[in-house]
Length: 130
Image (cartoon, rainbow, N blue to C red; front, top):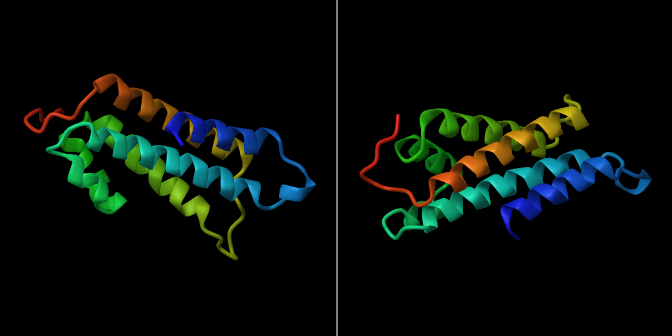
């Protein structure tokens, strides 16, 4: 599934809550948004043979490498929203699930990162963006 479709599915979970998904939709929406971000980053790496092996690394490794290929603000935003969504995906008995407003904000950030990645095209291993 394409990253844009994943985001739309996550937004659909937020807007169409019902009694059958009570308690489940927040973490499911967070998971969809995180997978959309991960998919967009994987597509970015796979766009060029020199970086295609990075898509098989852990996401933390990929996020560590991202500032060397994207501008630092976009890389920082991707790392932040990925960490926030990862935390939201996991059930913690002492924490509440994320709110619809938090999820909407994170989804918007993911959309921004994906748009910025798409606008850059292929990664260039010689281009050290600042």
